[in-house]
Image (tube, rainbow over all chains, first blue to last red; front, top):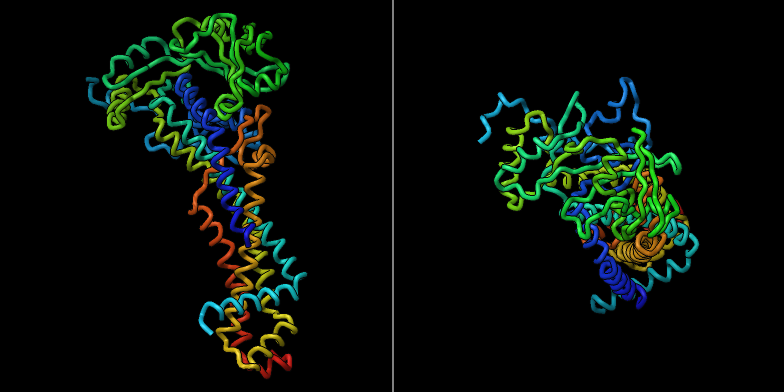
Length: 101
Length: 382
């Protein structure tokens, strides 16, 4: 009974400790992302559309050569991010827009 | 007897009855612990990864502008950058120089990037800063030399000035930072060409307007907003967590099936016990309360243990091994450690998935037994 009551407390204590210890890491990462203008975490590096998923086209896996299939195991697990964007895709030709101000 | 003492004695009766059939409860308990452990680990790791990426992406450039050619990402030149610089509200607009290089010696792909002009202290030609995983795969240290070759035939040869700390490796593991002349030499890239453009917009209300202006000035370019990127990563991790839950759902169902089967094919001895209790004058409610106390104690112990073990596995040192589940396959796996980031909501939803169905699976058959005739139960006819 006592152990059961102590356990959550101990875990939350450990959580605080880990958070405190990793604060420098979080701030360091933010500073680095800010300074280098980074856009994507390094989760997978096999292909450009897996390394920088945020910047890849939906069809990027098939783009390198006609008829190419998506070769990498990560490609099967990671869905491309592009279709989730609100207004993703190239901007329309100038004539569609009003003249730049 | 008041309510509290009554419930306490029912609880101690339930515990004694659990002790009598300890082997059975132990076997169910172990499966229970394992089930909770699996779900809790996925929840913990996905939550931690999501939080970490979200926090870090807050500092990412507000808008990323890329030129498209034949439907693919293409290089931009200085004129495009100049058009961007005139837009009001856009700050720190700059051309990024980055690319990939396949290292034939260790057979991995690095991301080579040039730090911006305001990088402090500036990177001199002949110097490089490496991500932690690059240094690990190349087996090099600060002060040593680093060399790589690009597909264009250019080479980069530089002294390692610094290795980026492992605590930032979630975003920097595969980075090779080179000075601009070295970068252009490595890729044989002409002066004035950039990979893409980035800019910051300080006022969130202006982002859409700035995006519109960029699209008007640079037709055919793609503009990716940081907020979309962050949201897309959020969704991507939700999706991965969903995949894993889906894969684990079979285990969860079979666990409930096991519990339900065990309880509904109420052991003859157990049915007799319920019959005796009913015979000596216990009400259906009392019998059910004993059963509920049994289920409650087993649930609390098993889920507590499962969550504790998952916590140890995710945040207590075993984490890097588990990470391959939620991270990617990668030679240059970042050596980041997950930070516990979960609240009561996650734990409650986890318990709702495991404890509630367990209660149902235990109580429904017991209620059926308790509601039937004690005489029939004693004869073993129920």
